[in-house]
Every structure is written in C-alpha cells, then in structure tokens.
Image (tube, rainbow, N blue to C red; front, side, top):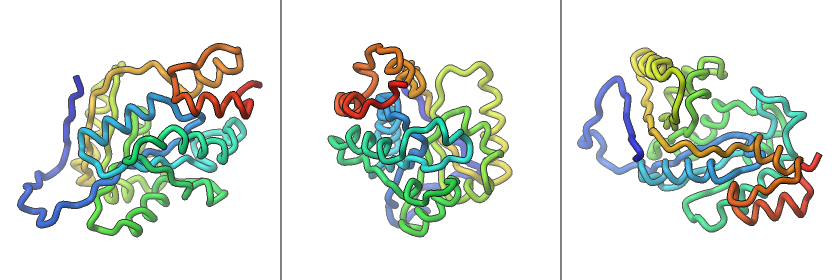
Length: 222
C-alpha cells in the first residue's frame, strides 16, 4: 500500500488558497535508459498529488555523474518520448540537453519557476539517496524555497537518516517535503545496460518501443 506523508514547518489551510494552483511534477536524471521503474514513480506521484503533468527532463551533462559513461542525449531523449507517448499527462523536455554544458537542478528550477509563474506549484520528484545528499547540490537552500519535494522511499537501511534530514530542512528552511513509501521495483538502468551487453532479455523492464529502439540502434552492446 502506498503511504504519503507531508512534512511542513507550518500548516497551510485550504482557505489560504483562493485559487487552485496548477501542479507540475519534475523528474530529472540521465534516463539511460528510461524504464518501467521511472514510469511507475511518475504515475504514482501524478496520482497521489493529483498533478496536472509530470515533466521528464534528461540531463545533458550532469555534474554528479561521469559524462563519458552516458549515452548520447539524442538517444536518451528519443527513448523518453517513446516511453511516454501514450500518457497525455507526461511530457518530455530537452531544456537541459540543449544547454550543452553542465546542468544543475537549481538552474532548471529557476527557469521553470519563471516559465510557469507563481500560480503553479512545482514538485521535484526524487529518491531517498539524492534527497539525503541534497546539501551537496548547488544552491540547495534556494532550491528548497523554489520547489516542493516528493521523496520516493523504498526499504532503506537507516530510515532515521532520512527523517532527520527532512526535519532539518523543514525547520531551517521552511521546506515542503512529501514522502511516499512505494513498493520496491528491482529495475535499474545499470542492470538494463548490463543485460543488453550480455545478450540477456530486457523484456518487461521497459516499454516495448524503447526495447525496440535500443535493439535497432545497437545501444549498450559494448
């Protein structure tokens, strides 16, 4: 069963909102390749928070990963488009890969904040490890003020670390952090790449059209 928890420094009553705001979810990452785990997370966030849409934003040159190990952004973007084409609430954005330079989340969020305005609430969807390490991100304090956070949690070895980090951010920066416990899906992009390299099946780990794209373009074969 999915369980959603909201942590805020101060409660906001519904009367404080005269107009219902739009809600935009944001999923960043390398998506190398995108798989059913990503899609399940996005759909869960969409459903639980009644988001208007979820933006998938593949990184062009992410600062936290070795770009030499990342597949060409054109292929990654095309695979995302194929994976989400049957879901009208999902949208792919090439805003980071078009920059052709290192991509930082804070810069992306600032652009989206200007683009959508104050009448829209942004929800940055992330995992436990990334959220716990948020203090290593560029301008993380500003980031906490510009977007809500949805932290997707699975079974973790030390849940208190996450709880302490959430409390720290909500109390110190008045951050709005939502936590959703989701079933563990043993799917990873790393494993998919390894399976392709070893000639093993990747069926049902990602959408069929993405599987076909990988096969037709000989991705991850060496």
